[in-house]
Length: 460
Image (cartoon, rainbow, N blue to C red; front, side, top):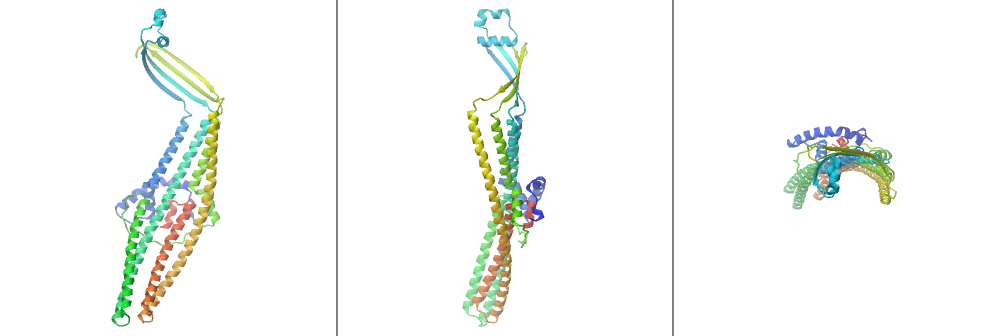
């Protein structure tokens, strides 16, 4: 495809953030000043304010936090406890005096052992544990979390392209609606001139009263079309505001819609670009890799686990009193010899992996079809634009000839009105073809995964 469209979403993300913040600030100032809104400004404002972008960003942050949490499993766990207790339970009293190292000969009397006096204890504990080896389960979980974070970032890029496509479609709809108003204004002026000409012919006896009535009906029809076009423009501006994530948007006269001849590559090349660049397809592939790592982590559950633990405790009869301290440390080996629940979990994760594999295959086929359809639509739109342009030129020439013939009394008002209607329709068809050509190109860029704000500049 064209050079400006070959930028991949990965390189796009390198410059998007700082440029987005800068241009959004400029766009906000421009909007407040009611200056002309460019397509680039509309796109960048939408990427900043669209609720869909906010949701995708939240998903990305959640996946980032999950990846950080997965890494925390590699770190040792350290806990602090301050325990204050008092009681006369024989076992409690005996153990407490033993930990406080405060036994005396009198404490071994039978009455003291059976019915001890209440004793208080201030216990300060530091305990820790560390999973030294879990058959690489944690490493696989970390790998899965990292891949899911990458998948969330790719999904965010896919959402960005969806936003860009919506803004492009809404912006082009505004341009088309403004051009339709220009055409209808011209047609009203033409109908008014025609009515004046017919009126002169009637007064001169060269036309009948029914000709004047036909011209007046034509004039009313053109005014109704202008009113409808103005309503369509209001709707188009509302849709553009919604696509930009704004509650309201001040209308302004935009740069008129222009006909373009967009570049197009061979279909196979466009399909290859899509399979490589489509962020949604990339996100699904990363999710499949994450599920494969997650499946490996579940399999690691069947392996042995080795953990280390330790505890240090200080026991005192009062907060500032004397007492004793003790510590214990050890290493634990754990093997699940009857992992029935783990087998069910393994079966579940295997099914999830199979489902994601099928989704990747289905999405690849869908992308191929989407690119093929977009490729064909662009070819059709370009041919339609050329045909509509030729028809517009022919209808304009036909109207000019019939005006001369009617002025010479060689054509009827019906012939003239039919030619005027054909000329009006041909103009509308042409600008609709220009509008459709721009949308078809945007659809192709989206289908190939290259619809970035930079690429959308060609549509301005």
